Image (cartoon, rainbow, N blue to C red; front, side):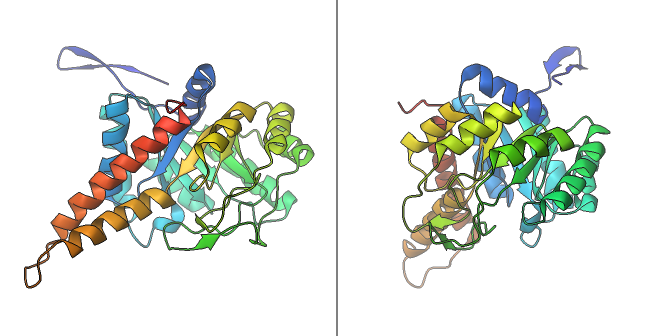
Length: 302
């Protein structure tokens, strides 16, 4: 909930919200909110700078599989502090949480949403674990996203290439989605309808009927994972079909890497190389990439 706080005699609106509240904003505006992973401080600054420049609400995420790059216990409190001071509504969310202990760690830090990922498990086990995640999150007033079906290989920023040949994809069955949502009580559902985590070698073929039917039968917001590489036209069609949240990281990460490589090449031979130079270039490139994505998700590019 958006709370009113008193701070040194001034009334301040805290912009930290849960996922359910943020998706309500998206559905009222008939847009999708962008959900961006902060795998490091440079990502974090780029995302906030982009959102505040565009005056755009967003979801700030950290994925469990990013733990080798940055520890949740380190970046989590910084994410929370920046969200509370933001000028736009922000939901701080754990992305692709794989066990209850890690979900609890994020909730203890103050995260307002968690995504439990049991998509690779048998349906019954996914339901059982997701119900536990919902029960846990409700104790903190946090929202829960789950996933049914599979977008394919869950790789973020490691240069993996994906496409229609990805044999790990499992499209979401709308009838199963209805049963899943009724059994678990989740607030949002990640739906597999043709996107894939990673970098596309060719344009994805999306099944918008899957989105429409899942949205109609479940009556909760639908989430797109694996949005990198999807055309703006297909992003808009996905939103019109029922997508209210779009996860985005790989191409932001790629933009930062390309900018850092360019800055490195620009240093004259024999001159010292400073990490701060590469860091600044990467941060600005990621900001511009996030802004481009946010414009597309909000249909500002039409």
